Amino acid sequence: MLNLMIVDDEPIILKGLINIIEKGSTPCSEIVCAHDGIEALEKMQDFRPDLVITDIQMPEMNGLELINEAKSRELCKRFILLTGFDHTEYLRKAIRCKVIDYLLKPINKIELYDVLANVSIEMLGEASARQAPWTGSGPGEKDPTFARIESSGPMSRNVEKIIHYIHENYALDLSLDQIAEHVYLHPNYISSLFRKETGITFIHYLHLYRIQKAKQLMTKHQEMSFHQISEKVGYENVRHFFSIFKKHCGITPGDYRARQHG
Image (cartoon, rainbow, N blue to C red; front, top):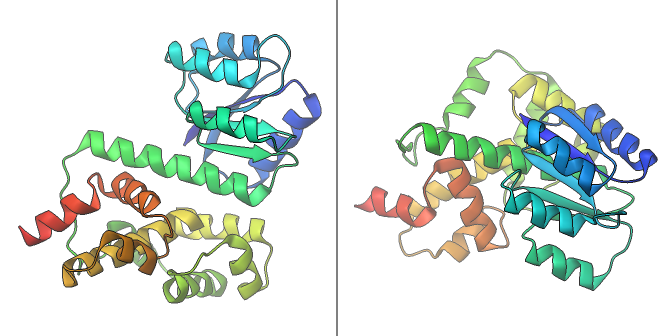
């Protein structure tokens, strides 16, 4: 679960973001707000957020300055930038600050939910890597998460349909909106329902299933490149594939393949 801080000098924006996050069944356990960069730094001393969502344009200290200062003090390492202006210069600065994402106002709920889910997955992967050595499952073995879900009892017809759709279309660029159209339900309701019945988010399940398929390909087809594998399991960007694989498995795809064929 995430300790989240939101920084924006507009009270309406703060209230709106909190409302979106709390109603979306996101992995946020606690949310703290600040109205400018100086206040944010003060609160970070005690709160120590896992993630900070901050506006760029603020009085006293802007969002980019806040990020640099917070990182230098080691108060937080994960940041998302908000802005009402789609300026190329802002994007360049955001990249230099190594932020997780750069979101435009008004906020797209689905984009925000996906980012929060990915941060949560990253944190879980880091925690798992720290706690225990890799004992990776073989290509023919199911991820323990799938076994837990299957043994937890019957699921609703809607969740079964969602899981079946993921299994059939994991190689495509899937989104909650597409799933919603398939089962004729609102994306927010699907997100909440799926997490309630499986214990994980839709995007988490999708990543786990894609990784399982990637393991099978790496084992059965030694000649297949990682670019080909990443595309076949639904990742257009091979760097993204490497990042997701390592977060979940604790090792890189290359290390996994070497251990399977060593």
